[in-house]
Length: 101
Image (tube, rainbow, N blue to C red; front, side, top):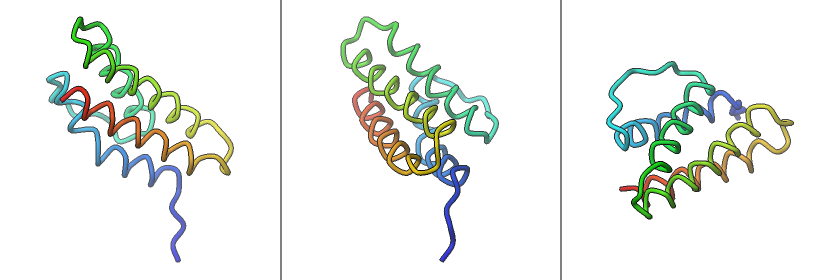
């Protein structure tokens, strides 16, 4: 049985959500494949949506803020918490994108 690493999980999250996140802000630029670059994208989208006067986008920004916090904690935290932190991040990413769309 293969062991999934933190980098693999970040890559899976990036592969699943990066295109949708970038589309929310009209970003077509290719970004690095690092966990930090993905977190930067989440934070950039959070900031753009949060500065809007549209309530749904502000709500989406709050979800993305939570996702960014969980992603940062998973990246810098202890190994035992990573699975639950990344699961929380995934839920907030999904909710934020759905709310903003």
